[in-house]
Image (cartoon, rainbow, N blue to C red; front, side, top):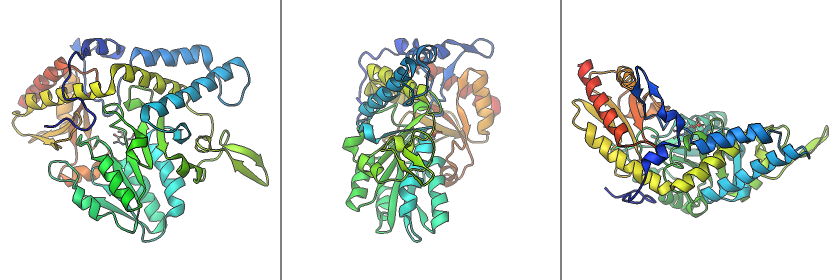
Amino acid sequence: MNAPDGLAPTLPGFDVASVRAQFPVLAQRVHDDRRLAYLDNAATTQKPEAVLQALDHYYRHDNSNVHRGVHALAARATKGYEDARARIARFAGADVAGTVFTRGTTEAINLVAYSYLLPRLEAGDEILVTEMEHHANIVPWQILAERTGARVVVAPVRDDGGLDLDAWRERLTSRTRMAAFVHVSNTLGTINPVAEMVAAARERGVPTCIDGAQAVAHMPLDFGALGADFYAFSAHKLYGPTGFGVLLARPELLAGMPPWQGGGDMIETVSFDGTTFAEPPARFEAGTPHIAGAIGLAAAIDWLDATGVAAAGAHEQTLLRDAMDAIRDIPGLRVLGTAPDKAAIIAFTIDGTHPSDISSLLDMQGVAVRIGHHCTMPLHSRFGISGSARASFAVYNDGEDVTQFAAALTKAREMLR
Ligand code: PLP
């Protein structure tokens, strides 16, 4: 198997023990003194000491509102918030003016839907998505389609969980007004060829919106080089705080987009005769923002950069390969998603068992996995199931986590026979 784009194929000297030691939550014991193997990273990641300290420092020393006061704390909070924007933009290869803060991936996609696409959408227009999308990249487009008479068109997934790229290209037509697709599937682990997809869409003049929620912590991103119009991600899946996220956008597109929420901080002047709006990104950040969220994400990015995002991704590829080798002979095991380019996410079922029984038995052995549809109900329907269990790996997982997971799963299968 080739290493996916941007990932180093080998891992000389990756010191996972010292990475792990920086995550206090991982040191705890659960259920009768069991070692914790935290494998629910696609849902949310744990936070390193550096992020915890940045959040603590902000609230202890600098807490104030941004952009409004002239006192020392307000100046420090504003500087922290705007420095974080510059830091995050640099990490993602994006323009500072095109880096909008949101509550997460979901809100970022909704921003694109309501501010960019809705004013342009007419009956008969099409929005192209894929069968592997998270609900966050389906439902906002469906709501727009229902309002306008447009149609959501779906590109299919192959049996191995890869995107049927030919079918996706065929669905890019003169009626397509947006191509929205996930970078890394949160269920299949499939890494989509986003650069190729962006190029194909651009050739036909179709704007692109990429859901990067499961990508940014695991592979390098250069938004500028990618050439996409919009790219969304969440801080909490990148070792940062919950309730915070980012929309990267081409600044010239943002400049032409109307606000989608009104309130403080997004205006230039207000009178009862009318309001003029601030330039982007402020135009899209109505109200008091999640200041600590921005500062926490910048700290997470500093931390990840120091660790090396490509090295993190390569380490996770090793864990994926070892975990697949360790579980592949479990009778009745079915893994969803075996495409060649795959991130370290293993969604699975075991014949004759229910995913919730599996996950309870894993939990009792200290192994944290997720069960259910993982907000990809259409994808589960595509594979003829209503849910699955999912183990997902992050930079701090190690060989012991893999061993513990495989042993616990083998035992769970035996108990449920
Ligand atoms: N897209 C994908 C692929 C995800 O995995 C998730 C979260 O699980 C989301 C979008 C939504 O992210 P958030 O809930 O942080 O907005």
